[in-house]
Length: 264
Image (cartoon, rainbow, N blue to C red; front, side, top):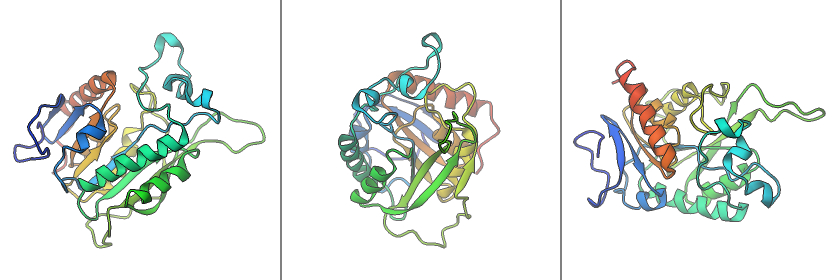
């Protein structure tokens, strides 16, 4: 594993395609299969942006491609679509419970979890988190500052971060008080359809204890992995979509090679 030489994460030695470097790795494959291979209790936090399976109130709208649902780019400039976003609400909720249960097994007691979501799937996500055995501790807000205006309606300019912990979460952890609202615009020159701002993720990863190991089962553009390393954490990402496995890992490697040394 291209983390640190003393890192033992997997229960067997069957190879998994991966890219990485000192303190980070992104694994290529279905996260349901990969998570089952991790040793118990090896992660200090989970911070991730799963597919929302949202973007419409009717089945034919939810079944559109991710670019059709979440991007206004023309076909010539469209980014690659990503997998796993065409489930109906019941299937999505059951799938969430399954992987959240598996992830809890590989987390330490007290490990925090942060999950991005939109307003449509917010109730289902909080249900799934608790069904999987996590303690739901609240919802933070990502204010994107801008949105498409609709006369006579509230602007849909926010997404949400559902967060909780694996069992008890002591208040004396060596972690500062994080804000409940984060204000950042969508990133320019994105390489992923639903990419989150790097500075936003650099703030959110600080929910993890210093020097901990963070898991992102939906690595996408690699933003969480990159943010974690820049803030001095180890990071493991998983990505199933071929294009984003390559784009995300290339981006993390390039940015880290051209950044100042990660915090100790």
